[in-house]
Image (cartoon, rainbow, N blue to C red; front, side, top):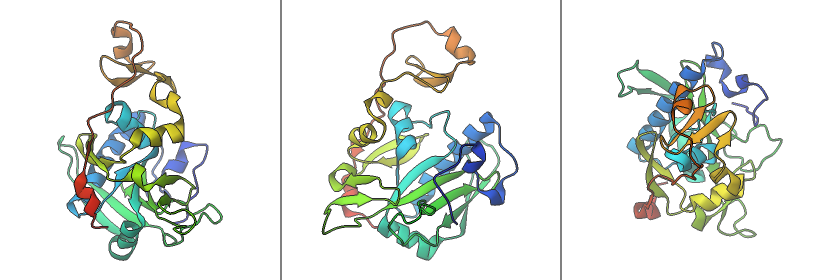
Length: 254
């Protein structure tokens, strides 16, 4: 698996092995919802620690859901967990039965053979693993975090895309929910989001032809009937979903 940071068109958000054409917006949202539920549930059932990150974490902050304009999702794991995935779970397939009664889905856990290289290099292997929907090729990007320079930068965790986090900002991970299932999030989630996206990302109520509806606590597209049926009011910044410190994460398996 050799991957770059993305491409300007949506085809860059698919694994070519399972690509059968660009899906509709409805199918994209449904795929991502089932995919993150399956991923988080499978990792928890196997005692593997993972947490949501980047734009996926931003979606959690607004209403505990995927941002409706997202085409893929992001999670992180420790370097130790990544090594375990590479040694014991690479190329494994996982079946998930949605609770809404829709068809069973299957996912491939694909670990990059270059995952042990913890530097950026030529930038073509910054994604360490992917959780891929074998029905249409959409995926979750999984990146590992490691203390790559413990002598020069003790307590600083980084990925191969040059994102850096302090230990105290990540751990202990907080327990919450995302898309209706148990999820872990970084301890200082607000600081991490402001560092990556600036404070405006936590207060702006219009983005990519979507408007935040404080009554429904949803991002609505401009052509959504619900948007025009709601009374206009002053924009309100959201309150993130409940998140409590998970002290059990102080004694992590990986």
